[in-house]
Length: 108
Image 1: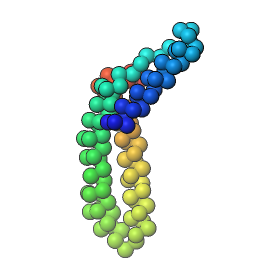
Image 2: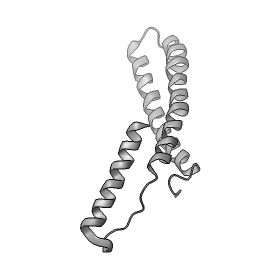
Image 3: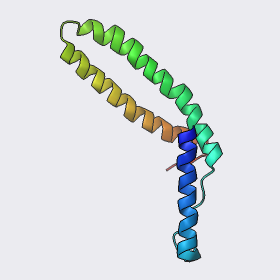
Image 4: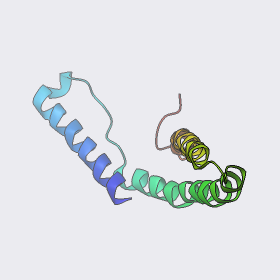
């Protein structure tokens, strides 16, 4: 949550500096609600990311890949790479959906 708050705060600072340097004729962006967006990302990370990681690491890797590829560690490692990469893309997509659902960003 702190990192999200710092990132959004820095973005707001850069938007403000751009307005000051370019005047009001430049590209006008709305400032982001730093605390609300940070809290939404923190809630998402605490629940969704943790549950997805626990499921992949505990269930799929330990109980499935470990047993199926017991004799071939390379295939087990490759399967783990595929699962974790898929989890990364799924998580990014779900974060955008979560922020749209909580009205932090405008949906496309």
